[in-house]
Amino acid sequence: MAGDWQELGQTAAIGLIFAFLVAKLISTVIAFKEHNLRITRSPPASPTAASSSPPRPDTPAPPQPSRGDDVSSDSDWEGVESTELDEEFSAASAFVAASAASGTSVPEEAQLRLYGLYKIATEGPCTAPQPSALKLKARAKWNAWHKLGAMPTEEAMQEYITIVHELFPNWDAGSSMKRKDEDSMASASGSKGPMGPVFSSLMYEEDEGNESELGDIHVLAREGATDDILKHLAAGEDVNVRDTEGRTPLHWAVDRGHLSAVEVLAKANADLNAKDNEGQTALHYAVVCEREDIAELLVKHHADLQIKDEDGNTARELCPSSWSFMNQAN
Image 1 (cartoon, one colour):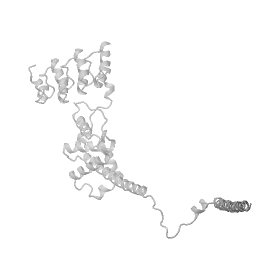
Image 2 (spheres, rainbow, N blue to C red):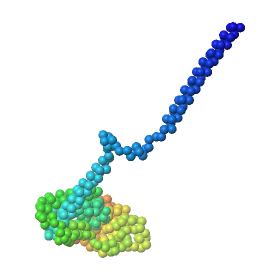
Image 3 (spheres, helix red, strand yellow):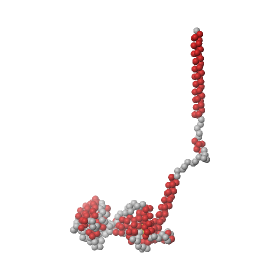
Image 4 (cartoon, rainbow, N blue to C red):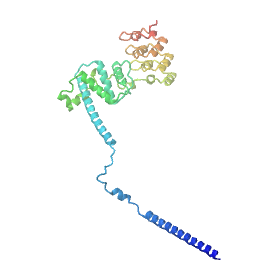
C-alpha cells in the first residue's frame, strides 16, 4: 500500500513539471508573436521624404551623361566648318564666273574639271540625259560631271577651291574680292549659263525645246522602245523620216546606244547611209560615240565605210585602230 502512494506521488510530480514546462513554452511563443507583430506594423519610411531630403555635403553628385553635350558640340563645329566652306566655295565660283565674263584664258581640262565639281557641289550626282554625240562641248561637260559619280558635296567644294587657288594663287587676296557686294553677285549671275557658272567657251549647247521638233518614232528610237517602233512601222510610219537636223530614227538609236533598236531599224530597211545636216551617217555616230558593237552590226548590214562627212572624214578614219572589222573592204 505504501508503494502505491509513492508511485502516485512521483506521477503527480512529473505531471506538474510537465505542465509548468508547457505553460512556459506557450508564454514564450505568445511573447515572440507579439514582438513580431509590433515590428510588422511599424510604418515604413516615406519615399517622398527620402527623395526630398537634401543630400549630404560630403556625398558626391552622380555623374551626368555628357555624350549629348559632346554630340551637340561636334555638330556646332561641323556647322561652322560647313558654313565657312560654303562661303569660300561661293566666292570661288563667283570669281570663276567673273573671270569667264572678262575672257580669262584657262586650260580646257581645268575648265571641265571645275564644271563637273560645280555641278556635284550644287546639284549632286549627274542624272541629266547624255547629250548627242555631235554636241561635242555639251558631251564633254556632261562627261566631266558624270564621271565624278557620287562624290560628296564637301569634297567637291574643297577640290573646286583648290583648283581655283592653283590657277589664280591670289584670287582672294584683294579686299574687293572678299567683299560680297551686289556688283560682284550681279557679275557672277550674268556669267551663268543654263548649266551653271562656267567659262563661256564651254557654254551648254544642247538645243532648248528640241523634243517638240522630233517625230514620235525619233523619240522612240532615242529611248530604245523597240516594241513601239515596230508598231509605228507596222502602221506605215516612214523608217527614214528626218527631224529638223536631218537625223533619222537610226541616227538617234545609234547615238543613244540602243543596239536592239538599231537591229530592228536595220531589218526594217532603214537607210544605213543616210546623212544628217552635217554629212554624218549612223556609222559616223557609232564611231564618235565609241559604240563598237553597234558599228560592227552596221558594217555587217553593209553600211558604207567610205562616206565622208562635211569635214572630209570617213567613219573608218575616225574609228579606233583596234576595230579590225572596220578595215575590211567595203
